[in-house]
Image: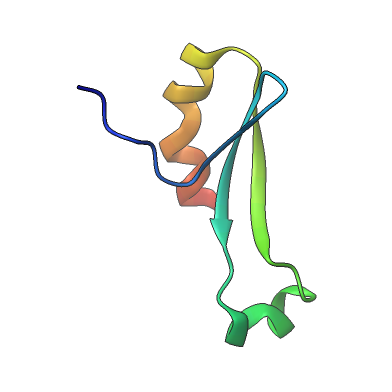
Length: 57
């Protein structure tokens, strides 16, 4: 059984790495609620690049 991915967003066949920003830190990030990085539309490539993207965020 496959595990659910953490820090993963999927919409319209595109994939993103995402991290939520805690409420008390949002003022340091311009009141953003999350940080995202596009991973592309190919699931295999997105899955391969996901951990590095989360580390960069």
